[in-house]
Image 1: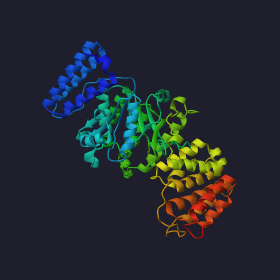
Image 2: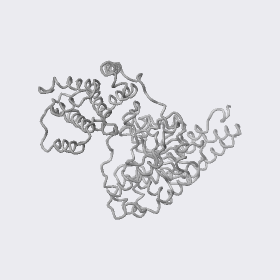
Image 3: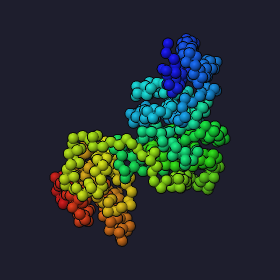
Image 4: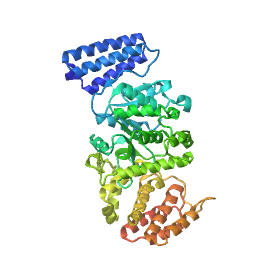
Length: 513
C-alpha cells in the first residue's frame, strides 16, 4: 500500500475530507457509515505514512462528522480544521444562472494558483453548479437559514454565514471575493504587496473591457465599491463580533447592494483596516446586476453610528463612503506598479482571427503613424476587446478612457468607432439625421461649447465623442458634427480614420459628407 504522504498532497487530502464531511451531513445513517469506513482507510494510510499533520487532519474531520450526526440537520462545525497551506482561504458565491462561464473561469484560476477556494451556495443550486463545471468538492452547501431567501426571495448567501463558516472550519486567513474577479497573474506574489499596504484590507477591482485582451488605457481601478476583503484570522473573529452588534448585518448577502460598504465601514472604523487598489483582480465591465439601490437605506443608521454620513440621507452617505474609498486608495497607491502585480497572461496577435489580423494590417498600411503612436500591442488588444464584447456600447467603452491627453483622445475616439464599424455586425436599421422628441443634443452641444472656449483640443475631442456616440448607439448621423470633426483633423492618420467613417456612412444616408 502506498503511503498517504506519497499519494496525497495536503490540499488534496483537505478537499477529499471536506467532500466526505459534505456526504455525511447531507445523507442519512447509511451515508455516514460509508464515510466512517472511508475515514478508517485514510487514517490507516496516515498512520503508515507517519505524517503527524495528516493524522491530525483526519481525526479532526472524524470528530466533525460525528458531531454532525448528533444534530437534526447540517450545522456549522464547531471544530477548527487545520489549514493545508499558508495561502488564505478564498470564499465566494458563484451565480450559476448568470454569466456562469465567466465566474467559473475566475474560480478555476484561484484553484490553479494554489488557493483553497470554495463557492458557497444553497443546496438547490448544486446541480446547476456541477453542470456548469464547478468541482463538487469545492461547493460549500448552505442551509435555508444561511441565505437571504426570506428577505429577498432567492437563496443568496448571507455574508455573516459565510464568514462564520470560514471562522469555524478553517484555521487560516480569509480572502472574501466577488465571484467575477479574475486574478490576472501567474503567481501569488501580489499577496506580499497587499500585506505591505495593510494587515486588514478592503480591495477594489480593476475594470477591464476583456480578460483576454487587456486594453491598457481602459484598465483602471473601480473605486465605487469594495470587491474583496483580506482578513487575517484574528480580524475575521473580530469582524464577526462587531457585525453581531448591528442587526442590519443580517441583511448582507452576495449580490445585494450595500453590504460591501457596511463591511468596509466596520473594518475601517473598528478594526483599523485600510482600502487599496487590488491591481490584479480583473473584472469585465458590465451593466449592474442589481437595481434596488434603496436597499442601502437600511444601513443608514448603522453607518451613522460608525460616524459616516451624519446628518445625510442614504444617497449622500454612500457618496461620502465612496469618497473615503477614493482617499484611502489614493494614499495607498504606489508610485509605480510593483513587479509582483504585473499580469503575465496577455493575449497577443495569436488570439486574433484571420479577419481581425487583416484589419490590423490594413490599419498599419493606411495609418502607420497612428499604430506607431498608440503601439501595435495596444491596437491588437483594442481589436480583440471590441470584437469580444458586443454587449458593451460605444459610449460605455469611450467613457472608460481618461481625458488627460486631448490630442491622443481625438484619434483614440475615432479609432474605437472605426473598429466597431468593422468588427461588429451592423443591423438593418437605417441611419437618420432626425433627432427624437425630447433629445438632449442641443444641451450637449451647448455644454461642449461652454466648457471648451479656450481649449480647441478638448472641443474637437468632445465633438468626436458626441458624433460617434450618436451614430454608434442611436443611429443618428449629424452632418454638421461630421464636418466639424473632419475639419479639425491635424494629421494624415486622423484624416484616414475620418475617411473610413465617411466610407461606411456614405452609402447609408444621402447627405453624408
